[in-house]
Amino acid sequence: MRSEVCILGSAEVALMPGDWLAPRFVARGGHATVAVPGSKSLTNRYLLLAALASSPSVIHAPLHSRDSALMISALTSLGAQFEEIETGSVFGPDLRVTPLNRAANLGSVSVDVGLAGTVMRFVPTVAALVSGDIHFDGDAHARVRPMGPVIDALRSLGILVEDDARGALPFTVSASGSVAARELEIDASGSSQFVSALLLAASSFNNGLDLQHVGASIPSMPHIEMTVDVLRSVGIEVDDSQPNRWIIEPQTFEGFEVTVEPDLSNAGPFLAAAVVTGSRVNVPLWPAKTTQGGDHWKKILPLFGASVELTAEGLTVTGPAEDNLSALPEIDLDLSEAGELAPTVAALCALSPQPSTLRGIAHLRGHETDRLAALTTEFNKLGARAEEIEDGIRILGPVQHGGRFSTYADHRMATAAAIIGLAVDNVIVENVATTAKTLPNFTGLWETMLENFSSTGKAD
Ligand SMILES: O=C(O)C1=C[C@@H](OP(=O)(O)O)[C@@H](O)[C@H](O)C1
Ligand SMILES: C=C(OP(=O)(O)O)C(=O)O
Image (cartoon, rainbow, N blue to C red; front, side, top):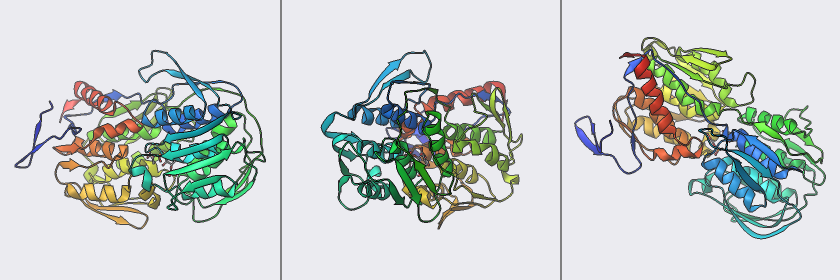
């Protein structure tokens, strides 16, 4: 039952517009099936490649969210066409994509990247392949996300980029439809997306691309493997036989037909709910083999006492029968391969009385918000003892009470707060609508899952 006023300790706190009172769990040992919509990362890669193919494509079960809408709108501005094919799916229509015409002169075009890393990093390299002045800008939070390696790479490839020398949005790419240079060095230690951006467009460069990463290690490597895998799946040959080097010869590829896997990162909060509430959550259509970083849940959740089973029915996670978060061993986890999962893992850690350290995720400071600062601040507001470390976060003592959890325009901050709110009274999630970045109807899916726990489980 939702009310306009919420009691926090002895104080009454009004719910502000956009606030959501995270529901507490009321039953243990129940079960729920939670179908999650398509992967953001796969959807936006397929949309982009479909726009560059030599013939139309069909994308089944794409994600429909703010990030994918921004990708569609950006590629539409560059001349691609998207047509919806109704299928009756609750997650929205399939898409038929007619590729863009690189010969057209687009004149002056504005692209809104919102806060989508995949749009702000991937679309500028496509802009290098058309003729026109393409102006990129986004949300206030987007203007502080690192873009320098993409801007520098475009310049090294001979493309004119006008910016204000901050290595960030806004900037304008002025291109004439051809990219002649082939050899390129970039430092992708700040984001794997810098490499993916170049690889996705490289087959359309006049002389292809010989890309070498120089610098500290690249985070989120599975996302680069995803890019290579997706390129190969549409028929583009990629030589990745040497570490940190990728070679793509110039080549055309035909349109394709593909079905997008569910978003395994977005499955995370629901699986975490199984852990917190001692329930069973099944996510259907979990792929047997995937490049999604979210597949790491199979290894991560057992550290929190859950059992995990992958069958033809999907992935099933069963949380510990009793509240054994208090019996957990100390967690010390390197999340460099799947930093995207860190806010969800951190929320579980923030409920455990044992100390936890999440490391290998310094680059989270350049995500939707500075996630290390945001998580630390918000956990501590709820009475936890959390601190930033150089490459991560350490949580020394758990959350003690409810409060208003700020989300910093970050979908994963909102879902992290929902996990905490399962076990702690009166957690108010500010601007829960920010989840629409990758998971519209998050609150509906969450509440339905909890209703299913209640009707199948035992009152706690
Ligand atoms: O290529 C992609 O689709 C992504 C790559 C990763 O970025 P970083 O390498 O910046 O972590 C990931 O965190 C992001 O959510 C999606
Ligand atoms: C880092 C993320 O997103 P983006 O694609 O905007 O980088 C994320 O979804 O956790």
